[in-house]
Amino acid sequence: MTPLDHDPVVHIKMSGTRTDSEGYLDQSVRLNQWAIDGLLTRNGDQLPGKQIPEVRFRTGNAYLRPSAKHCNFAGDDCWYVKTHPKIDSISSDTGYLTGG
Image (cartoon, rainbow, N blue to C red; front, side):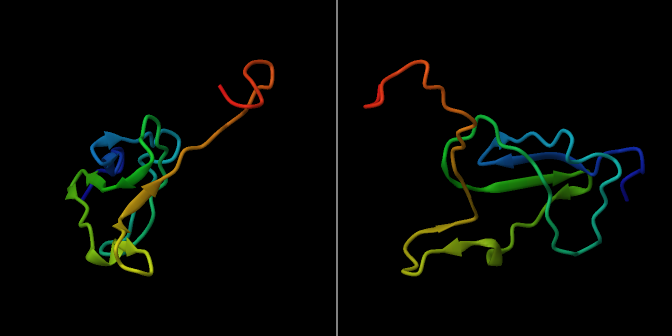
């Protein structure tokens, strides 16, 4: 059992790159035993594409269930997590409308 003054999660990674859970996870977060639940986190310097998630709790690593894998309808493209780029803002002060 995790002490009440400790965070339950040591780290969350996507394909080996740590994510940022600051402000999302703290010592008040508790998950029920053997229950499927979600954990909020933020990716920073993560390449777009397929990722393999890893969650290390103080008591050990989370089990990556085979049922967590998703596939397209043809079954030839499968993944656990897909990350996508996000554009926060675009400035029209610089650059060209045609690109570059």
